[in-house]
Image (tube, rainbow, N blue to C red; front, side):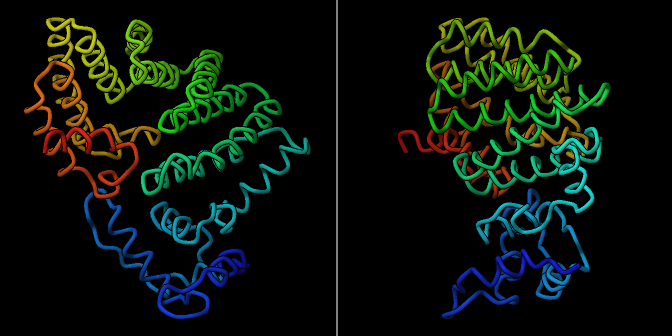
Length: 340
């Protein structure tokens, strides 16, 4: 079946080269440029007008995540707007929402794929750009969870926790502090219900970060300690929590304890998997280049601004281009430019 939504979105987008709608050749070139720019390893994209034609004709129903993210950004649309939600998944989601069938794994995986794409889109745009769509997905999963039977209810509640956690994170750069607190509190409760230590630890660490940004250091320390209690979580998250602990302690004047925490964090960073495919899809940024920047924040809090600036500059240089220009990397850029 032809993807009329994608074709209509393209034809409704003005060309950057001439009057009228953007053509396949022009859009394909922009997609290829976008994918190459945002590839973590700087790999060239072979996407061309022929590939785009296959998508519009429906020969290929769902392209890879980087292509989907590029088309969403360039056409200012969601995956659903462009017809990229898997048809079988769409049908299962719709049936579950109206109560025709109970929520099943296919419906939940459909939403999880959309969430993964939104995270990549945030890297290329901003928190405000993806926030409305994440809200929609959270409302949808809330209804799916209500319609889910055990044991799939636990999976649905876990996914809802992740969406609430993400909403809490996205609210921080927008300085919607109370909104962020409510989402992160709900994410923690849902993670407890789902018995999901990874999602619970992430929600607590994000809540600690929220308080750290507001200089509420006592609350940040308590939440960080709670996030570190369960060692069943992935080493990437444990590394993030430990760097966060070092920064909190340094900001609070506990220099010796902060240095001890920094040593632990550096040791954990050395244990990160070499293959990024081993990272959870919701935590693909837990890689050395990301943690290099976290180390810079700790050094700044310890008063070593010169070394902090150097480390922050290095972190930006070794980051994938899409991350370097992202909104969340702003703290690193600000630190790298300190007294420049």
